[in-house]
Image (cartoon, rainbow, N blue to C red; front, side, top):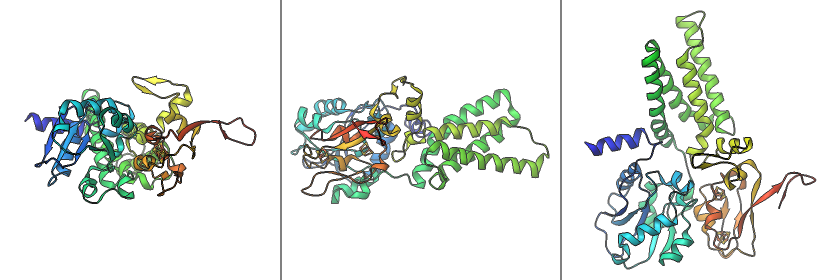
Length: 369
Ligand code: SF4
Ligand code: SF4
């Protein structure tokens, strides 16, 4: 019963942490040559990972991420080299296997510095795929380009909608239950339709940023509701609280959808940085490399003389920004797609990648400083 409740909490309230026990787990019947995988201690991730690894024999190290998923925890540096080193040392995994290769989830790149793990433990880090469902194929055949690219398929978007919708739906429903019972059912229907519709059609909505796209969705939604009201019910409709709240929620969500999907650029953080807002809680805005990259105040620059051709930048970039051809230094091939996650900067062996400040006052445009 407790397990089902925890599952439902993780599924429907995943914007909140849901920690599970850290340490070593056996998947199948692992042997001394079985792979060693690392993950976070977010309950839902662990459940889904176990399902994805069905039929595989592996050792799984669950590192402390404060009960948050890999992408968010590594972005906030809650999942980091220290927490991974801690689970390596305390789990006794070194006595159970004959090799020293650790597979990290690719989306841990912004937070877990592989070189620090290698230096402190003697283990070698291999970067796994973005999606856990690709792990069996990765273990069988190794990594390929599609496994490294972050995606946001319809299923993933609807899954996100489910996890995000519920707390908002519940708060709004409670409000209507207390203060406007007549609109409760209407609100639930409109808000659910708005969220699911937004996440379903977002790839095809015009606009470069999530907020702009949310505005378009809101206009369509508002227009549709107004039309329905005019034709079916009321020839002179007045603004309705259920519509307004649902539309505001979509807008709020649109503003931060880039912070949720690993393949979209955040709108909220660079906007806050432009306002000069430094921090809310433990989330920093102004002065971070991420927001500077997103605002165009910095750009990625490669010093080819320092490149050690290690391939780490290509291995951790979920956007395919870097190419590391064999026997050649790295190349920036798709800079516009950069979401500023900072994984390449953190993992670069030779400190060859820098985020240089851009002087916008330089004559003739921008120049890297
Ligand atoms: S190029 Fe941009 S998106 Fe890719 S790893 Fe570096 S910071 Fe992240
Ligand atoms: S740029 Fe850095 S991470 Fe990329 S191949 Fe060169 S040394 Fe490695």
